[in-house]
Length: 352
Image 1 (tube, one colour):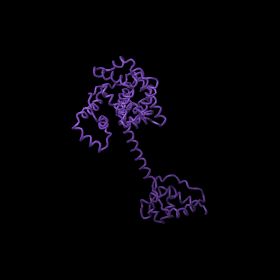
Image 2 (cartoon, helix red, strand yellow; image 1 turned 90 degrees about the vertical axis):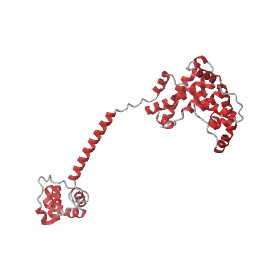
Image 3 (cartoon, helix red, strand yellow; image 1 turned 180 degrees about the horizontal axis):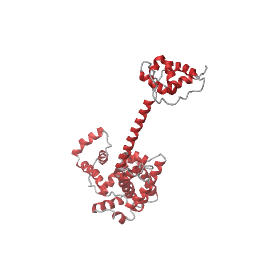
Image 4 (cartoon, one colour; image 1 turned 120 degrees about the vertical axis):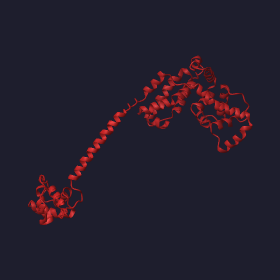
C-alpha cells in the first residue's frame, strides 16, 4: 500500500499506522536528527507524527516529509543547535566512518546540510529541492557539491558538476542524457564527480539511525490500537457456520417454494396432480371451486387428506381483491382467478 493511502487510513486503522511508522521511521528520524541535532530531534519526531494523525483525521493528509520540513524549519528559526552537544550526537554512531560522517554533517552550514538531507533521506530531485527551499536550482546544486566535498569527495576539477548531479538524480531529458553519456568516457573529472554523487547514498546509509525505542513506543501510543488478528481456526469456524446457515436457508426456501403456488401457474383440469394441488390449496372449498373451474371431471380427483383450514378471503364484495387473492394463493391463471371470483361469491352467498 502506498504512503498516501496509509496516511489516509492511519488515524483510524492501527495496522496502517504501524506499517507507515515502520516503513518511514528510519529515514524520517535521520532527516530530523541530522538537520536540527540531537537536542531537539526526539521532540520534533514525535510532533511530526502527531501532526500527521491530526491532518489525516481532518481528511487532509499530508506527506510526512513535508510535515517534517515545516517542523524543522520552525525550530531552525529559533536557532541552529545542530552543532551543540556534538559529543552526544557523534556517540550515537558505532563505526569510525559513521562518526566521521556524523561530525562532518553537523559541521556543514545549515543550507548545505538541508539540501544533502532532502536529497538522501527525502529522496527528492534537485528541482524539487529548489522549490522546497525557495532557492535557484544553481544554488541548490552548488550547495550539494559543497556538501559532498566536505563529506569526503575527492577534490576533482569537473567542468560539469551540475550536469553530473542532475544525471545521477535522473533529471536530464533524453537528449541531455545522450549527450552526457557520450561525453562521460572522455572526462575523468566528470566520472569521479558522478562517483561521488553515487557515494552519497552510502554515506547517508552509514549515518541513518532508527528512533530510540522509548521514543518509538510513545509515537505508537499516539495512533489507534491495532486490531487483534482473528486466528485461522476462527475463520474456518465462521465459514462452517456460514455454509450451514446457507444450506438451511436453501432447504427451507426450497420447501417453501414447493409448498407455495408458483406465480402465473395455471390449473390444468386434465391433470390429476394439478387438480389435487389446487384442492389442497383451497382447503375446505377445494371440491366446490375445482368443480367451478373444471366441471364434473374434478369430482374424479379426491381431495388430499388434511387439506387444511378454510382459507381467509378478502372482504365481502371486493371483486378485484378476490381475483388478486386467488392469483397470489392458488395455482390459477388470471382468467381462472376471474372466473373463480364468481364461484366464491356464490359459495358465500355474496352478491356483486
